[in-house]
Structures are given as structure tokens and as C-alpha cells.
Image (tube, rainbow, N blue to C red; front, top):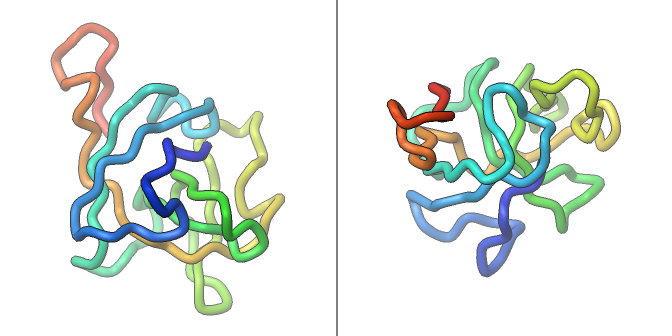
Length: 116
């Protein structure tokens, strides 16, 4: 599920970056149209974190996925929606560009808002 593309989609330029989710691969955790705040750097990625990454086999595609395990100097990623396989099962290892800190839209407490 690629987020909307920042000026240069293959890298995050600032320590904090806003990213917009597109597609259903992270449902029900994240849905199309959710806005996320992503941090580059900070604590190391851990299994279970939601991250923004680039698959080595698809360097033009910035994605939001869940980190499963470190592999070959990168990460094996999976979407939360098991019906969609546009993750490491299709594209292999990915390089993480940032870790999702929070979904800020829709705001928590609003109708349809979901916690991360």
C-alpha cells in the first residue's frame, strides 16, 4: 500500500514526515486516506512496528507495511490484510526509511478513527 509520494518517494528528507496511505493492504489497522506521521531515525525498528520502506526489487515504490523480521541487512515486511500480497512475499527484502509514530487523520475519537 504505497503512501502518497513525497517530493522524492525513495527517501524521507526530514526527521518527521507526513505520509498518506493509499490502498487496502494494511486494513484494518490503516485504511485508504489515513494520514501518518513518520520518523526517520530514532529507536531501531522492531518486529511488529509499522514502517515506511522501499523494496529492493521496487526502488520506485514507497510502502507502508509491518516489519516482521530482519533479513539480509533489511526487513521482511507484511501487510495486515492477508488477502493482499503486495509485500515481501512478492517483492522480497525492503529497506526501512522510517517508523510510523501516529495516525493523525482521522483524529482519534472521531467517527471512523482507529488506534494504531
